[in-house]
Image (cartoon, rainbow, N blue to C red; front, top):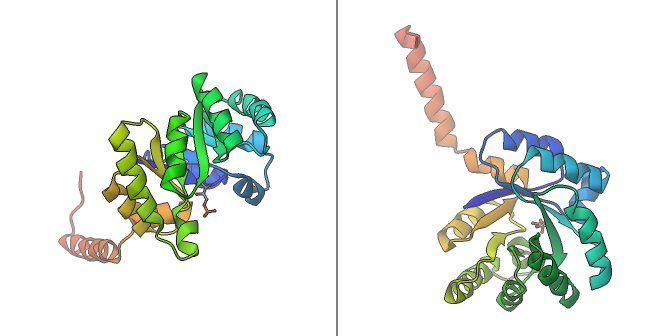
Length: 217
Ligand code: E4P
């Protein structure tokens, strides 16, 4: 399973990229706002740090303007994935861009039927938002299972990119279902490394090792 980080914070991205475990980055207009940076500048910088796909989102609502925005975005770097919303215009844009060899991430997906449409439009990634579903009292992960089943039924190559992740259990469930990618905030990715028993075990090993009086090498 691939790990993307959902942020436009370049310091977080650099730090996580150093682990060697980061496969890509997703951004959205809210994350760009939070970063306080110029959109095109920060996306270009991110593309230089992470070789994998970096999602940059169009903001227009109509197909013609989306195509103009996508043209600017895809010129930033070869690893740009143009992010389009799951609307009729968004899917028209998706079909045109992927037909041209550009990676496209279809975002704001909330049903398996929407994901089916995105696959038919040739999307590289479909981003179902699990956390926002949970927030309103539905089971976001259920949709991931449905999408996995449907894509496997028809051998669609669109990658299931689980988005709007809130906690490590979303990551675990995504892996069990067989999602292709997760995108999570930096804090959730850092949580994945942690366990109190790992910390406690390290402390006792370090204490016992000190008592041996030995060094390695
Ligand atoms: C995905 O690409 C989105 O940027 C993101 O996961 C949305 O998450 P949120 O619901 O926490 O805003």
